[in-house]
Image (cartoon, rainbow, N blue to C red):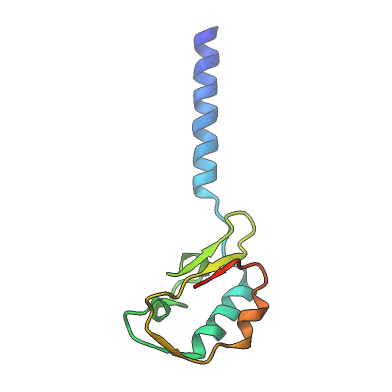
Length: 102
């Protein structure tokens, strides 16, 4: 009986681990649009984090973008070492949940 209970707990824990690993909220479409607007205001090199933005639908997977794993809200935008110049788009101020910009 104890052995079966232990096996049950082990399988339950493994199932929960798989669920949390496979479930991650995707970027909200409005945030994807705002990030692409932000990108459009900059000049950047092919090596920049911005160069690949937009090629993947889920902006949470873009280099330099971190999202809340439950809500899909952008919580960090890291453009450090990106060799960018240009204008900061007003769209940045519509991304309301980000806590870090670098």
